[in-house]
Image (cartoon, rainbow, N blue to C red; front, side):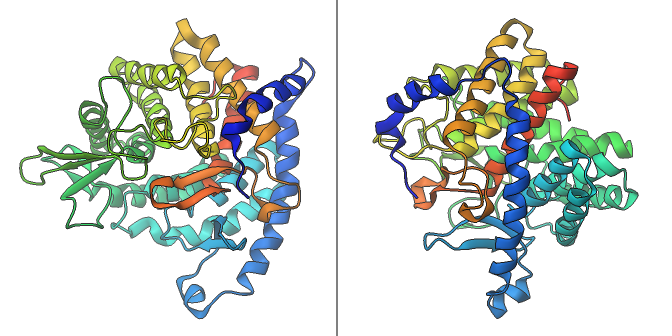
Length: 410
């Protein structure tokens, strides 16, 4: 499974010259055609995995793919897992692209189990789980039941907001280590709150989302505009206690997916608020990423920009896919650098397509190989991970819409 991309970066770059996009190459259709066949194969892999579930897994109601395990088996997760919304979200994207009711029916089937998360106040990942699934479903169908589920989910998420801190608490675990940990990933859950504010007319949702973004912007970023992964706050005073990088190489290193979450998150926050400081922050993060001396020629980052054994470190396709999503939208707002942002996003899509795609009717039905969950914990290292696939399809939709309609907003 592992591929030493660092040693091969020059070879990959040279070989990619022969497969660069040409004027008549429809890379979006090419990838959706591939995804249609691959996801149909994924259904057979899911059914096969379900046939071998333990009683414990059956009781937990596991249903959605997350990754490929070290032993080569498909890992399925229950709705409580933060990744549970990505696979149904992929199916909604397939329906959006094709208009085929086959994908709509499959999306409905895999979205339904996530509903029980709408009252789960023990997680900050409501956006990842519910907005990626029910949010896309509501956007594409207008189903009022989905709307109600989304609004209840948003209300549940607001219960984790800490006034003294000005942020939504991320994790409840490791209470011996952190009082009120807030992770950069949490920027991605704010879109649900912005949506809820517009849909309900209740400004509380918007105020919480803005405050969280402002507090994170103040405390998560270093002078070079890279971000920490975790900032821990005193729950009484709101003061910063610690700054850590839990899933990256070291506390002062730049975890690549964390930079991607920030880029996407602040671009989205600018769209929803029009606040120039959010646009400036997104531009600064993009500048950090693409001026990094360790970013390879193919624009697919190593799992951490400061990983110690570069170029002999695993890449993270998931970070690249999230970055491409952010860049397509950022190109709409940062007019001065629009062409650069789009060119960088296009390069990422080309690289993922030509060198990181899974084997057709193989790799348990995943779309992309070579992602990293937490390299610092030797967890999900150099394997397919479901959120890479989700954001890959989203980036393709954004690219297509931007080129045809001038907007990357889905």
